[in-house]
Length: 316
Image (cartoon, rainbow, N blue to C red; front, top):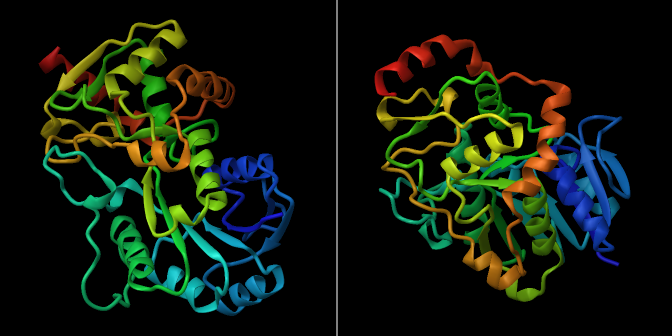
């Protein structure tokens, strides 16, 4: 039986990955900073991944076949794992944010640019931190690795509440703002269960997946298509209003991208190597809407709804 140590396995995406791993017969040992974590796994260890001595002790105690790292976002996090990992695969949960400005080109896996120079000592923003996480993997050859680049992830319990930002606006019946230039581009979004599936396949796949990176998401679904499906599921009109991306307040439309960003998020490699086929938007909504309707979360940007209505009036 494969033994997988999941660093940060009690989080939003980590829980989905642990469930999929256990469904595949993998022994899952999850870590978190909490002594009473939420999630499903074979066993649990308390770990502050910033404590390298504790990390080394956990790796020595568990002796995993694979480490799935859900929470590394600075290069030093990956460097610490590489210093102590022997004879095991390292699967990094990266992000679609690692891609550079693509001027509307597809964000294919090879578009990633390895960083130059020495690892910065200071903390970096999320995207640059993840770029360095991947760079350190590419630069070394001792530890076999796989990196998965999730998009904006949707599902029940989404801590960012970005999906709630749209559902609140659809429910109130007013306009929902989207970027005019990119509303029909394939969106960089995906269901948490699909992300968990791809992570599990990265853990359990053969040597052919090592040294490879993978996008995961809905594929060809646009922001407009997703929001129209969400409106239909809520029994409301979509009422989308297109705003030039330069004038669009990000909190009002967190799935929108600008015309200089990536033009699509291809998943061909995950399809070919991992047998991934994205779920339907309807399945994602059927999973997500009961949580939203029960918990009634509110996205922080909704506080500026009146300004959005005034902006929409200029373009409707």
